[in-house]
Image 1 (tube, rainbow, N blue to C red):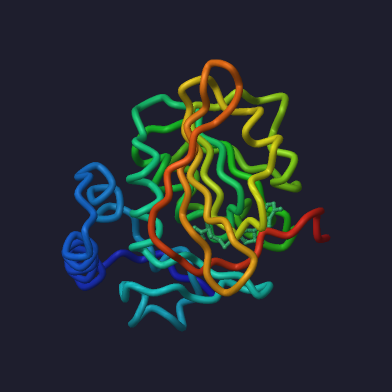
Image 2: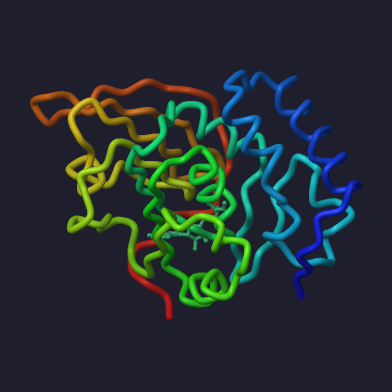
Length: 218
Ligand code: SAH
């Protein structure tokens, strides 16, 4: 069960969470501001209410997780989001990361392969706040060719390799932030699409994500 009440206690815990993330090295004030304003406890079962603002991942069902706030902030900071940019997210999950992007005024297209998680978000009243946030049930390896190209792509599951179709759907000058690796740990990579269609790569810190799985799951 979920509850949608945002109390002074929740708001206070959010301020503390923002300071924790800032201490860990996040400097983009627009990212920190989005985290300050979004009631993260709405995105998980009310059983987690007391601990929802700890800087850690939580289960959201179907063996999946809502990412750790630091990880959300880290990926979002690398994306360098500007208002009205078109952003493709792979791995909607709880829709928390998608909401952070929408709160920063991006036009967000997010894909989830688990039907149950996709359906849950259709009945999630908070998300009505973001009319520019669009949900798709499908396989993220395919991207959304009919809606692209995108300014930015963010992958929030561990990719064994860089999906070529996602690179194709990036605009020239566009950025993709993606954790790549097959084991327990992945490297955060940032790709910059070049005018000739190739991409250059920067390597950042290690993280641990649930796997990016091919195909849809009904
Ligand atoms: N961004 C999410 C994190 C969810 S965890 C959040 O803020 O809560 C990663 C999600 O990626 C899971 O929900 C998983 O089902 C989904 N996923 C894994 N492989 C996928 C694929 N090929 N296409 C779309 N979603 C995928």
